[in-house]
Image 1 (tube, rainbow, N blue to C red):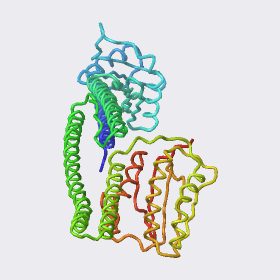
Image 2: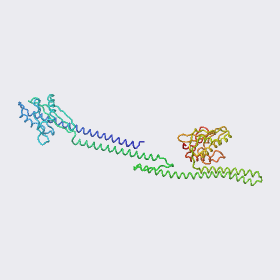
Image 3: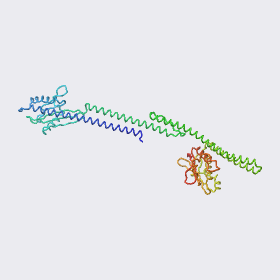
Image 4: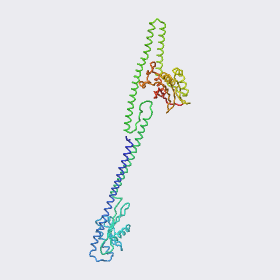
Amino acid sequence: MRSLRSRLSALWLMLAVSGAATAYLLVESFQQSNDARVARAQDLVTRGCRDIADRYQFFVSGWRGAPVDDSLKQDLIPLLQSALAATPGVEGGIWQTETGSLAYAYPTYEGTGPKTDLPAAELSVIKQINSDAQRSGRPFTTKNAGRSQTLIVHACPLRGPLQNVTAWTMTRAAAAEGPAYMHLLIGLIVLAATLLGSAIWLAWILVSWSRRIAMIETALGEPTDNADLPQLPHTGARELDRLVDAVNDAGHRLSAERMRATAAERLAAVGRLSATLAHEIRNPIAAMRLKAENALASPDPARKAGALEAILQQVARLDALLRDLLAMTQASQPKTRPVELDDFLQATIEAHRDVAARHGQSLRAVAPSSARCCFDPAQLQRALDNLILNAIQNTPEGGEIVVAAEIADGRLLFRVTDSGPGIAPGIRDRLFEPFVSTRADGTGLGLAIVREIARAHHGDAQLAPVSTGTSFEISLPWQPS
């Protein structure tokens, strides 16, 4: 699954690639346009030089020769003007190696008047290209590219009575001016602005959404006092706020359903407890009623005394049942204080050592030395008493019972492990429910009391997995003294 951040990053990359491609195409288009302008300018100077050569041939036909003087130079100027009139932006002249410039004309000059002066800045280039054309005997072209324009000069040899004579033409092709260059600048500016704006916009979206999603994650990760979902704050983004509202609504519905389920569970538990309690009380009452009826019907004093003794035993059974039930349903708030683990376990098992010895069992405690923790020793001792008594009653002669305590992963763990036959799989999941017992004479409230004491300490009790025997575990938050 791709994240929103990766998708927006991919979109930004696509914009960058498309922008680079567009910029390349714009520059390439401008370059091609510039090359086309240079090529057109080169065609103009070539054609102009050819026109000069054609008119010069007509001018010197039938001519027997004359000295090169001012009169001849003046006669050549109309020839140049006529030849270059059809080539706008082209200037040129006739050049002789020994004499230099014989004539010069720029008929399409856009100044205030006709231009008659030979361009001094390009004089060296004109001299060199005429020399090259004269020496090679064929037309010659040179191009000098500058930042704003490209200078194009062309020279071609002239045949006639005059020796070492060439015609030359010259023009300039603008490189950084004109519509194409302006289009390029506008396109690049718009492209740069679009890319920069898109980059800033996408970066803001990424940062904003990342911050808002992190806020939602933080709110979801905050601990709550119950199992309900936390109330998420609005982020300011419409799409995320719709999701936040949906989560909050789901949390409200979940809380309401949880409350209804808790109430239903409590009612069901009360129903089960009432039915079981009625059954547990009915049996002793039935036994007492039977004994009382037999005593009333019998004149034997010994039989009456035996009946009264049986009735007292059933009363004691009812009293123990009610005492355990009250202990489970009215658990008091733990009164925690610092306790030495080793001394606490030794004192706890000492009260059961004689009972274990009568059953032929060994009982020992294992605790870390010099470890002090905070808990209610009276309540924890009562919970461990229940687990130890269960272990004694379910461990055969010669077995061993180990009461251990350890601190691991921020938890204080108490374990009571025996070498008995273990717990039947059919009741493992219901061991800590009230009135669930593996013994016929048990009330089934001992393990329920153990769990209530553990939960009063913000912990829990469970059946720990072991390869043989049975092991019960009480897990509490570790509170060092």
